[in-house]
Structures are given as C-alpha cells and as structure tokens.
Amino acid sequence: MAYMLGVLAVAGVLILAYQSRSASGTGQYPVWTSALAVVAVGALFYFGVFMPERLDQTCPDGGYTVDRSRCGPGHGTVYEGSKPQPGDSPAALLNKIAIAASLADREVIWRRALMVAAISVGLIALLRPGTFNANEGLILGLAIFVTAYGMASFTTYHHHKYPANHILEAVALLQKQ
Image (cartoon, rainbow, N blue to C red):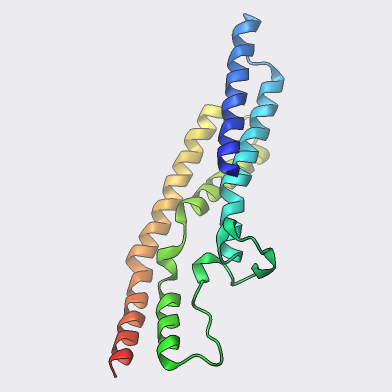
C-alpha cells in the first residue's frame, strides 16, 4: 500500500513538473519541482524499501504484522520458525536447525542493494556537490545497485549454500536415525 502511494506521489510530481516546464515556455523546471521530486523519491524509498526491509527483519509477518508487540530483533519473517524452545522434541529441533540454515534463501537482496546504491549516491552528492547531474546520478546509482546485487547474489549462491547444504544433509541424516 505504502509503495503504491509512493509510486503515485512520484508520478504526480513528474506530471506537475512536466506541466510547469511546458507552461513556463523556458524549457526549465521550476525550483520547487526539484525539491518536491527529492521529497517524493525519498518518501518512495523510505516506504517502499527501507520500511519493508526493517519490518521483514523485526516482525514475524513483515509489514502485515498487526500486533507490533511481537516485533523485535530476531523476530522477523526470515527467522520465523527457527527459534528453539525448551520443550521442543528432537525432531522439532532438527526442523528448526534446517529452517535457520536456509536463512540466505529467504533474504531480500535487491532491497539491500538498493539501499547501498541510494546511500552511496547520496553521500557522493553531499561530499562532492556538483560532481554529477540527476541523469549521471541515476546511472551511478544503477551501476552501484547492479554491483552490490551481483556481489550479494554471488556470495549467497557460491559461498553460503555449501555450509547450508551441509547442515541440511546432517539434519536429514539425523532425522533418519
């Protein structure tokens, strides 16, 4: 829901900017459209990327968690079903070990890569004002996003899967005994 509102806000800003540019006859965007675009894109980023990532990390049903008292560190959707309890049977504990071992498969890599790209472009823009315009910033952000996403995907697929598979194989062997 929040993501859709953010998309609508950005679309509205772009339409207003286009109309203002056409009406002015100068071909230049008014200053207020740049400020509004930054606020709209910031809101879209916050509600469409940062908040869902935080809620997935801390709430058992992600953004759909109604009772927020259930939220906290280690209670997110990616950890759901992996916390052992004192009364768990050996079979239940093995199942929870298998769930915990598959954590890398349940993480949302693209949101983290997008956060890295946005923060990197923002820091470069703040530390070196005038270094690039909006188009160059988007291209730089895209390059950083692709690099961060590729590195995270590569690491997950080529490195994290082996220990996870070893754990799952050990759990399967224990369950057969």
